Amino acid sequence: MGRVLVTVAALVAVLGLGALTPAEADSKTDSKTDSEAVSAGSSEPGSLVSPAGAADTAHGFASLEGGTTGGAGGQVVTVTTQAGLERYAAAEQPYVIRVAGTITAEPFGANIAVASDKTIIGVGTTGELVQGELHLAPGTHNVIIRNLTIRDSSVEGDWDCKDTDFDGIQMDTAHHVWIDHNRFSRICDGQLDIRKDSEYVTVSSNRFEDNNKTFGIGWTPNVKTQITIDHNWFRGTKQRNPSADNCAFAHLYNNYMTAQADPGDPVWTYGNWSRGATRMVIENSYYDGVQHPYQADATAELVQRGSILRNTTGRHEEWGAAFEPRDFYAYRLDPAAAVPGLVSRFSGPQPLRFTATATQPSLDPEEESRS
Image 1 (cartoon, one colour):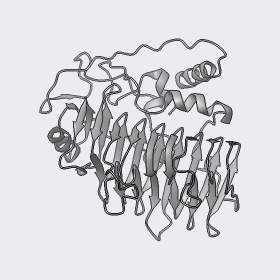
Image 2 (cartoon, helix red, strand yellow; image 1 turned 60 degrees about the vertical axis):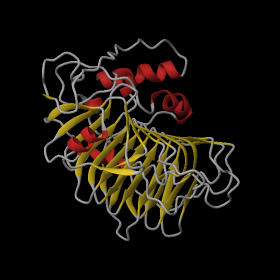
Image 3 (spheres, rainbow, N blue to C red; image 1 turned 90 degrees about the vertical axis):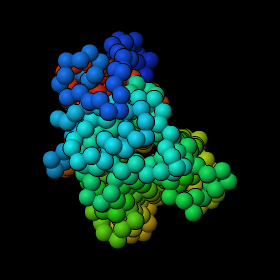
Image 4 (tube, rainbow, N blue to C red; image 1 turned 30 degrees about the horizontal axis):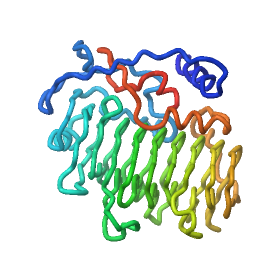
């Protein structure tokens, strides 16, 4: 019930129907070093975050088949260096890893391995990974990545990034992963690459900005991936927004795409692409000034309903029956007309509220209403 009330209040505010009561947001961060940890449930003020509830539970496909809980139940640690992040992210034990401030990876484009049963969450709105990649190797599962900015691994003069593989987040044959409230900017090549039979993934309330090859799914002949993509903002991105190749089920709803990069390219500047044998459903999204907003291979299926298209050109393709998302999970659609206001306000890193009773990080309840 609490989540419903917060969501309604947020919608009212964005539509200009009334004032939104300010949510209490505590910006405190603890002073622990990378080598210090506190157990989940500690009474130390500011070390943990508000109690887990519906808003802190992965939704969509990441909620199925056991769900995605990340490092819940493990120790909570705060990291400020690459060494600290690498240590805890790759550990065998579950951890909730709070990233405080900017971590600049060395060497340029370095991979930081993320093992199973981890939550990685930026503290406040300032947690950043610069010129580095979070990498989930085959078999990795139960991972939550939230509230981070991942930026600036682009290579000057290498727009196509054919000779590099500096992704923001890359996963191969992983399962049960929730990517939520992050900001990706200027990455070479993919900002988010979900590859090789990864399953039960949800990508929600992120900002994808200033990029060429933005968000790719697939690179496999198998048709296995199940993915939910909702309330994301694609701004100044050229292609793969996303490109979904051989996904068993791809559910896209309430996404916002604006200010498309390089619109003069007649083929490789596009929005959503249902490729191979993908079955894709798009609902109540908003496309503003987009070339080829949604398209499908002849072998794929794409159902679109309820979206708003403003000043769009090129391919607007729909065919096949795809699937019915509600056969898999419950969800609530926001009106397409409200998407620009909601997504521009609530996507990307948000303030955190700290208490001493939680086992999972929570965004400020007002901000978290978009999950």
